[in-house]
Amino acid sequence: MTRQTPAKRTDALRNRDRILRAARDAIADADAEVSMAEIVRRSGVGSATLYRNFASRRELLEALLVEEVEEVCAAASTVAGDTAEARLAAWLRRFYQYVTSKRPIAVELLEHVDRTDPVFGTSRDRVVAAAEPLLAAAQQAGEVTATISLDQILDLVVAIAKVPGDQSYREPMLEAALGGLHRVTPAGR
Image 1: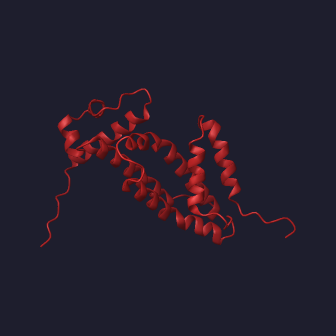
Image 2: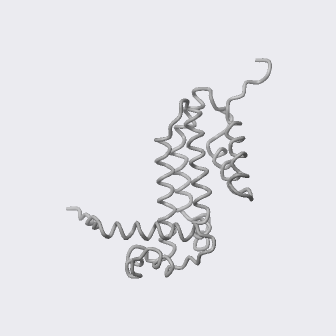
Image 3: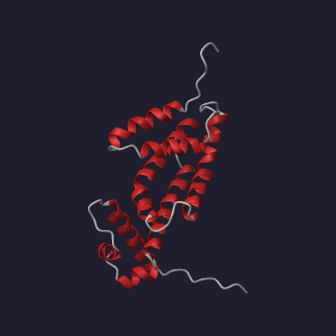
């Protein structure tokens, strides 16, 4: 007989969500001190509740990263667009938002682990698996060049997200890069 862990109570799930939301907001606030005490204050739960859900700062940061990876992966199956290329581009824009919004979380997490930690590799693998069908469809339709891999495209988007400057400076670069994915027919053909 297999023992199943009991489902979390509704109030326990609500508290966990409040903690994650408070932590996400605190990390996004460049001027905020992001201690566990600050997360307790922002979430309105007691410190025992925080530590019952997340025994360490690392566990909390990993939960935030996993939550965001789940959202970006789910977006791969729900993006809209008239063509396969348009759906890929819409998802890549969503991925760009993910990269720019998760950067503070990843930076915080890197203070506690190194980049070779499985949480990073697994996240990348999940993102690639979710987006591969989008790229394959666009390439099979002849709308995106077949000479570039998804890993290369994701690295390009991440590189653009790291360019110094604000969104209004980086977004035209993203749009130029996405436009460059279009299958180009060589002159004379």
